[in-house]
Image (tube, rainbow, N blue to C red; front, side, top):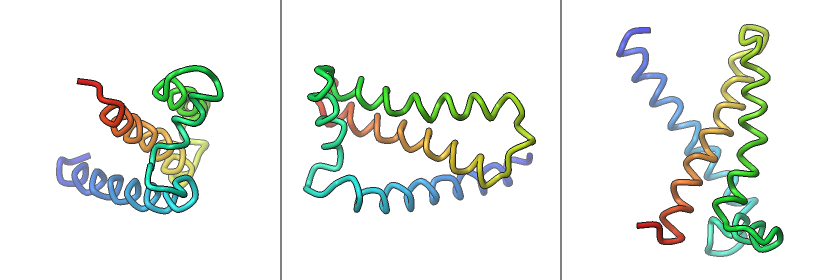
Length: 103
């Protein structure tokens, strides 16, 4: 892959992430706090919000690991979805870490 092709793919990936996270906000963030579900899940499990997020993210990581065993048997659409889910959780983790005041 050329650098130009890579940069094009990177831009496409960021655009997919933005679209997905924006659409999910309507479903998962009924109030002003976009990260509320992770905080609620943490309270329900008596853990911190980052641990709650990582627990949810692990499902997507495992799914990618299963697909990686036979990568060519999955369509690019399947890869985009699964890798996108994992990437979006990383982005949410970055926001959550800043939100809870990690310095």
